[in-house]
Length: 91
Image 1 (tube, rainbow, N blue to C red):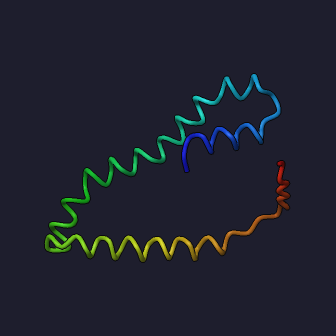
Image 2 (cartoon, helix red, strand yellow):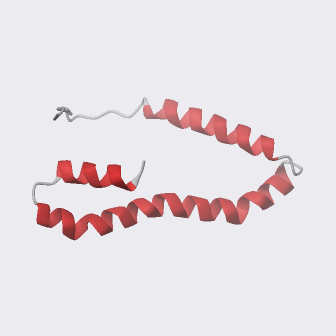
């Protein structure tokens, strides 16, 4: 997801334009944390883990990542919500 999509979604969910402009930098900064922190963690420890656990064969790390992604997707199917969500398309 890119920053312009986030700003559009925040604009759609908030009523006051003043509130949006005051908080937009904050929302984008928090979103940026969810991109940067996993990259820093991966760059810090993934090389060591591949070398020690997978005998310097990075393909196994990719396989585990793929299975983890599939498992995470399946687990999201278990999430239940009590609230009804209505999406309206504005042209």
